[in-house]
Length: 105
Image 1 (cartoon, rainbow, N blue to C red):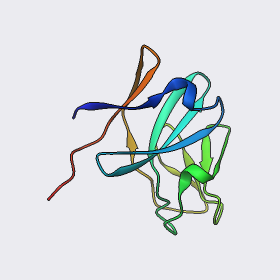
Image 2: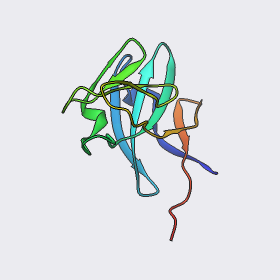
Image 3: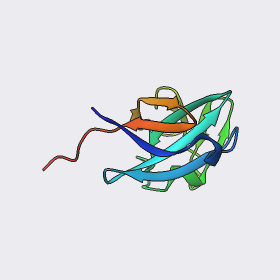
Image 4: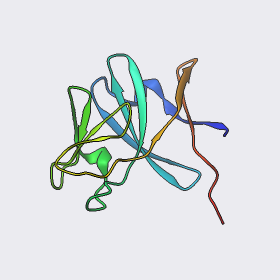
């Protein structure tokens, strides 16, 4: 996988979210405790945009039905039972880079 620049670190508020897209993949970027995490920006429960949700205590809560996901692993916390995909992130020289598999097809 190739890391792609998706934004600048300053674009993501501490404790907040930013929705971006790279290689046709929607991403919810979470900045929490000085780290950045990337999750697929679509809730597997109802298809809502996760980057419109809230971050609290290491989880991302979907705004539509309250499904929560661990920002590090994508595992569901409650009430959903389906995980969300996470992607590797690295921050270099103020840039946020995410590795997303190329589109299939």
